[in-house]
Image 1 (tube, rainbow, N blue to C red):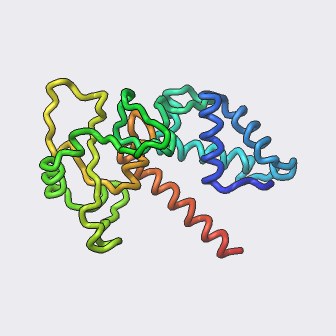
Image 2 (cartoon, rainbow, N blue to C red; image 1 turned 135 degrees about the horizontal axis):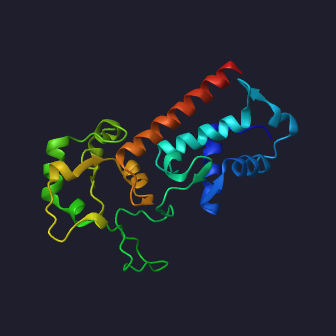
Length: 221
């Protein structure tokens, strides 16, 4: 097998870090080369004097740092790669805010539990009047994409995690709520604490760049 594309490298590196939590760069190189079954010839390939497969793994790690998934070297220590603290939700948990007390029964009707600020009609209305209906992460306008049925489909996202709220917390819909499409809202809540909007924007930007590079590579054939 040859060196995979960047998106696969990122996914494999993330799974490796989830399993081990922390490892050295050398351990990452060795484990991933073994997983991909790289031949001696593949491992010997170079780019600007550097081993190509290691170069690609380091850049994948850099992308994951930018996306908020992996700890920065200044925090984890140089030469140590560490998964950023946080609980990563399973895909079946559409988890705006699912309290631990909610019991899910197999076969029962599914119910999405969102926080009360996101459900509040008045707060939602003020938020959308102030910010409009464009997703603050990806920029999609659902009505423009899906027609009239998409007009009211935008979600509103609460920027302050519930864990940081104090008892006397007062909602400011213009400051604390933002419009966000269902797809981006789901990704934001894949982790606890949630990803920031900036982190998800970086994910989109990084993956668009990867896809663009892949298309150019295929075109060159």
